[in-house]
Length: 439
Ligand code: 5AD
Ligand code: SF4
Image 1 (cartoon, rainbow, N blue to C red):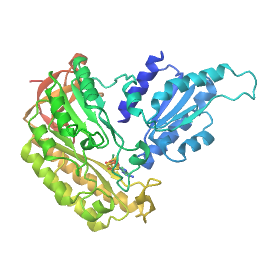
Image 2: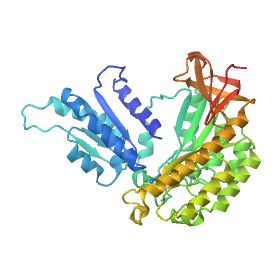
Image 3: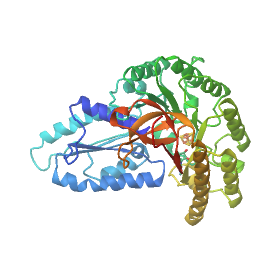
């Protein structure tokens, strides 16, 4: 989501005549697009904003903007205003389109400074405009992830999981018109993008805020699948309480939708799931996994898991470990619970950090061993892989993903990016698969 929003920032800046810096060049504008999902993300953002103080001293004409989730929180815009006097523009999650006007106002105010006492213009706006969808549809975007294209389908979240700050900083759910989403996907396919990822905090809620009952996620997927062309579709994130049988059936019978699903479980104990306000049980979740595997035996399933939620006991944690053994995820994103100000869980009694650390280490070790076993099963098989990028350190090698979402490194050139290949897997190293020679 943040990468895609940064593409919109790039679009706004390019329309104003700016371009991305080349290596070694000094920037005229630095925009920090921030996240506040965990304390570490927030601290990193503040640390990075601190670092540019010296740049601003060297170049007083530099414009510094801080946007996104972090300043949307109560009080953070004020902190930035007072403690970071060199920050010129602060915008929240639903008013980044104001960036153009605000940059122009800052530039104008600077040219008007005659005496020392003249104040420079600074902007601190975190409003949530009612006509956000119209504004967003008109915001230019400069895609940076070819051959992947991100397409937002729904903004915000209504779920209020007790640990999560997202509903507070991204406001209530707001679905885009189905026709706008379909037009955008068609345009991406026409422009040569090969993998479209539909985005939303909870894609399964798509259309709930639109009166027409036919506007729902399953129907959107069906319509996207009807678009002609050689491309793939993925989507994230799905909430287990809302993943319907219909969506599973559309996925299984589609032409373009990858058999790959990110289905965050968060915890394996019913007590913790209840305290997290996740509104599903371990049994319901496992039933979903069984249905998905029955409909698509080749599906790759990934998840998010949190350890150290305030009410998690050692027994609860062991239930999470058992669930991980049972589901056998191809990969899992694991997090230590981090209290977020203003959320209900932050007010509960917390468990010691050392306990959380010990739990996450056990969980990571377990998932790594499962990931490795699953990777080994790929050896000798031939898989369709979309070449997505050069493979950093490996000379003459490129990388891409199987339909199930596994990363494969194989021989190739820059020109191969954006093409599909049938790749025989010859080697597996934990989460990465390798091929010595293309078929
Ligand atoms: N602490 C740790 N992890 C969190 N997540 C959300 N809120 C928190 C928090 N307060 C994790 C969840 C979610 C992922 C995007 O981030 O696992 O699925
Ligand atoms: Fe946060 Fe829960 Fe909404 Fe996901 S569904 S963004 S975890 S509140």
